Length: 538
Ligand code: G6Q
Image (cartoon, rainbow, N blue to C red):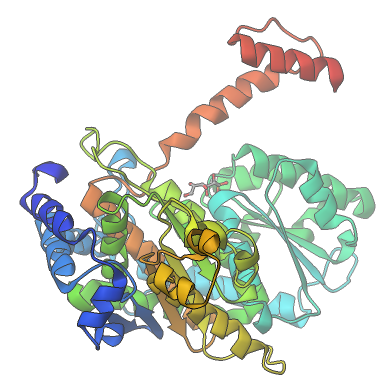
């Protein structure tokens, strides 16, 4: 494949950028009265309005040519066919199989994996029903009232995000907590007001060797046994979600209480595998299946819709345009729904661990900017904090606004006020307020520059009817596939994460140096001094 910057489509986009770079969104809307709906696409219950992005029909045409030159269609097929597209780890990438309906065939090395997926879903459902109905009792015969998920990264961010997002649909008599950080405060605070006899721990770890999770799991077991005394209690209070049966057994969890998944499920793509056991306990089996149905609807849309109407493809390509042509290095994710408060954190891992890469699949320098920095807060809170920079700062910050037509907790006209704010922000960012308008309001001349809004700041608005399990599934799958689309354009591997390794190795080495014997330090002078200061003051 030609390198990205040497490709014909890339050069055409560069020329096009030179022509349109100074065209304001005001002008684009003035030229085309239908723009607001012409650039909107609907799929799997999500309506996405891209009209406030700084693109023209020609920009999109050229981006589609780029996608064709980078064989996006074939690369999408490769993923759905179970090819080993995660080259650096020699693995298939099949989160789409986790939500495939029973009866579908998706093969890895000649074996249809869909029946295995449904077998685990069946076991998870039976277990979830037992816990939710009180059939599953703790060691002393008490009913389970608290569920604590212990995991980190992909084994935490999806579960906690999904629980918070769908809390409206969860039974309030069950308490859910999520422990991830090796900082003991996390476990201490999560368990401070819980009774071990009523608490179930889910140890969620694909490898079952992750330092933080194993340490938290051991401390959780000690906390549990400090009251229940008998090690036989572990079988009633600990279940595992993992691919590593040997380590699960070693920890003392009965493999009958282990829910498995497979090496073709990446951590950050695993919230709809058994890693979502806490989500199923919270929603019930049907709610979890609704979530999977939402994912699947977006998968089907992504796999079979022409690029022109393909929501994840459009989102991914416009992201490439914003990043590599308009020079934006970030995306603000701004959900106007309090339940989505953990959604930006979830997306940070999905997007940045996937596309935060600097070399191509072939090991060459990428030569363009890759994975944008994702961040955000629920609206309207962000408006009273960082929106100032987005409106009037010197940096370009494309925004994704997410909102819902129906309120889950209707109260007076709160929801109308919330949504009015969402619509207003997109409008203000796109159109701004020119100095003439400020002057017309008789603002003193020295304040005119301060009260001017340049506008031309791009945003996408995603609207859905209700934040329910199905909608959340579609929303997450939208971002998953947009991430893959971008990785294909950049020719990078969205499914490995070698960048997390070095810090882990160094932490092990330093960990040994913090032992009471205080061995000799041979780091750089800064690291040596920091360790010495810590040793002397701890
Ligand atoms: C995600 C990463 C990473 C992983 C955690 C937890 O894609 O692989 O975030 O999920 O390191 O790993 P375990 O599930 O193996 O504990």
